[in-house]
Image 1: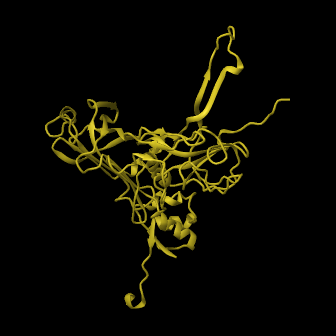
Image 2 (image 1 turned 90 degrees about the horizontal axis):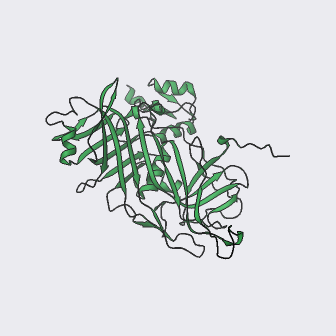
Image 3 (image 1 turned 90 degrees about the vertical axis):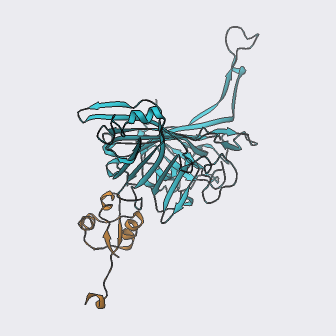
Amino acid sequence: MKLKAKLNKIHRANPNGVLCDAASLDKLRDGEVVDLPEDAGNELLNMGFVEKAKTKTKKEAK
Amino acid sequence: MADTRVVPVSSVKYGLKAETTFGSGIDVSGDDGTAYLTQPVVQAQKPTFNILRESRLLSGRGSVKNAADTVVNTKGGTVTMPFEMLATPRTLAQHVLLVGQENGQSGSILHEMEIDGSSNSDSIGGTISGGLPHSCNLAYYPAAGEGIKVCGVVCSDLTITGDVAANNGMISMSGNYFSGFSNPNSATTTLEQTFNGTWVAAETTYFNVLDCATRTLDVEGAATQVFIMKSFTFNISNGINRVGFDSRGNAEAYAFPEYVVTGSLVIKYDDEFDYGAANNVIQDFLDGDTLSLNIICGDSAPDAEGEMEINAEIQYTGDPGQDLSEGGIFHTLEFECVQNSSTNAFDISTFKNEAVTVW
């Protein structure tokens, strides 16, 4: 699932205590949209540290 | 030859699991397969059995007590156990519930515990529904066959502390567990217990006082002045007493006669909080003013782990003292929380996306 961090909250995610890999966590902290496996993504969603990234449809993109 | 076994302090763990029947063991089938929630303590303290032991020197025994003349009664006692740990989202939400016996849930999921003189349980011991009222099985576990299971566990008191200069700013909590189930037997508090369930690991998200973005306090006529904080402490106690006895001599109920919340706040002496007109903290004490205090750990109302909000109506209980350091003068404000008309004496909201029934 594609996720984007809540930048004022993601700093509380403990890199040694969440399923998300360190590289992806770094990207999230940098504000990037990251595609995470379901279990890792759902964990961060439950913690309130990320939100689902809005994906634009082709029509919207134009 | 003496035994060479050593038990490292860190090899002992303890966990909690909410009861569905007051004072009853969740798994009493032998080995306890309950999935206890591991508590993130550095050193697990042993439960203490506070029972009656009477040792008498009877007439006719001469000048030394006789072994036959002592009386031990495990009925009617209590079991207590101190704890101290860094607060985590679940442990904080659960422990404020264990001491306050009140919980409101909203959204996904904000847990609110308020102390208002009417919402908190005056007693518990009846039916448990949806995890409320809240009591736990406590598992203290040094080794297989050597565990202690204490049932009917709640908190008698809880202290929540945040200090920029302690624990790297991490907010901690400490207090005491209390149980009125002091008579061990297979259905409730048990000794020599093996816990073979899959315990839930301790959480790894914490609260940091340096995340407290919102810090406001009334002073004299000025409402919600922003303060610079060095530390805060809240102590919540419920005055618990065990009531009655069942066929095993264990408690039939607990009474909570008075919820008391006291605390202290160390804030900077500046133009918002000084000894001058309109901002005089001493005048607040002398006038007996009731002041609204708001601390939010996080960037908004709590909607993520590691965030919480405390609202309190406080009155200073002593002349504001001073904390003198190279950082300048800070006020040391000791207070108690009081119900102010319809405004809660104290309430704390924490985010943990779990229902109470999961605990």
